[in-house]
Amino acid sequence: MSNFKESYSLSRAMCAIAMFFVGVSCSENEDLSFENGINSKEGQAKMLANTPPNLPNVPFSYNVILPAYLTTPQINRQNNTPDNNPTTDNGATLGRVLFYDKALSLNQTVACANCHQQNHAFSDPARFSRGFNGGLTTRNSMSLLNARFYPNGRFFWDERSATAEIQASRPIVHPVEMGMTMTSLISRLNTLNYYPSLYQKAFGTNTIDSAQTVKAIAQFIRSMVSYRSKYDVGRASLALNANIRQVNFPNFTPQENQGKAIFFGVGNCGACHGTDTFSAPSAKNNGLDVNATDNGVGGITGIQNQNGLFKVPSLKGVEKSAPYMHDGRFRTLEDVVEHYNSQVRPHPNLSPEMRNPNGQPRRLNLSTADKAALVAFLKTLTDTGIETDPKFSNPF
Ligand code: HEC
Ligand code: HEC
Image (cartoon, rainbow, N blue to C red; front, side, top):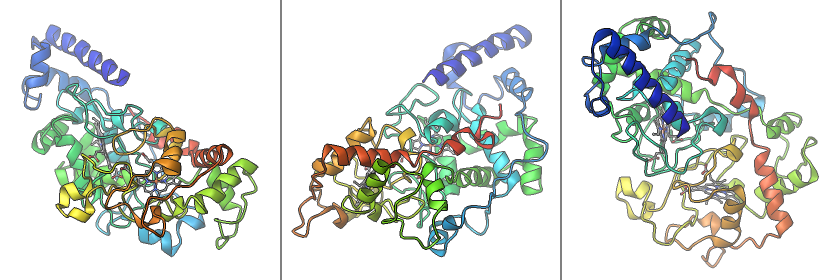
């Protein structure tokens, strides 16, 4: 929110300067009502063009060699990178610039990064996120860490986008989030003089179009792989075929190892947040409500036994992605753990992994020490490497 305010006053200041030099008027209402801001705010668009992003001469490497345990056949099957859009260093670099560019929103106040912040596992610490015009989203922003690893490749809490490429245009044209049309975005990008060479390097042509734009954004999103957490240090010290569910990690405290044993053992968390990517196999219902107002996947497909199913973002970085769940109802990991411990509700589509043999919602009956251990384990998934890596930071 403070970002929003800051950038908004910046754009107001630019407006004032533009008024002075080229005589355009920019009252607050006009700012928000122009279709694409190009004709009437030429001055402003040109000024943005004069602040190109700071990029290294040799692009950052977005194709790092991942540890062996993240390239097994099982993990490769979770990878949703399509053959026609492999991640390249120049493609992801263009994606990074687009991700941080406020020119993607109608009044040039909001970038993707406003709602997907690097130091918050690329999610938003606010329960609901503020769009370009001050409106709020109806769901909690999602962490983007490990979005590459979701086998059906679908995106959003309700899986409504079939691919990351399709997903990428949605916030741009969303009436609350960024308020553009793809046509107006492409005209605007053509007026910013740093883009042609970035498209040239990424795709071998300096013609800017929407297919390339969404491909570049998707490449950047898929490059956000987490492999530098405390969990990873422990995992890397074990053999590839080690039984991670049972073997204690040498770098963990006894409490963290106890939490790991609960996560993969009695807690059965690993059944849905599984493998070394901590990604879900598909959307599930985890018993938040008996009657949900938001039907998740079922709300999109109209299929009743998909009501209440939601995509689960990877738990890598989860300490930083608070608040939690599709509606951001839980403020802390302690609240989340208490939900699984004692509050799971009997939604008709509650996943079998969370039921007792008699079909009733499971109760874990964890002790206070067990719950604290589970939280301590979840915090070993925090990835300070990706949070501070310049290749994911704001280039402007
Ligand atoms: C105003 C806030 C806001 C802005 C701006 C925004 N997002 Fe989001 N993003 C959200 C919210 C909220 C969700 C969850 C929406 C839902 O599932 O219905 C989301 C979901 C996503 C997802 C789905 C992740 C997954 O695992 O399924 C991706 C990817 C994403 N956003 C990328 C972007 C990109 C790229 C941009 C810029 C082009 C962007 N977002 C701009 C708020 C925002
Ligand atoms: C039946 C599958 C399933 C099991 C088992 C399960 N979860 Fe979840 N988990 C989900 C789903 C589905 C969501 C998202 C639900 C929503 O937002 O509506 C979720 C969300 C979460 C979140 C919030 C993620 C975010 O970014 O908002 C955390 C943290 C979490 N689970 C931890 C756990 C822990 C700890 C356990 C074990 C005690 C566990 N889960 C067991 C399916 C499961």
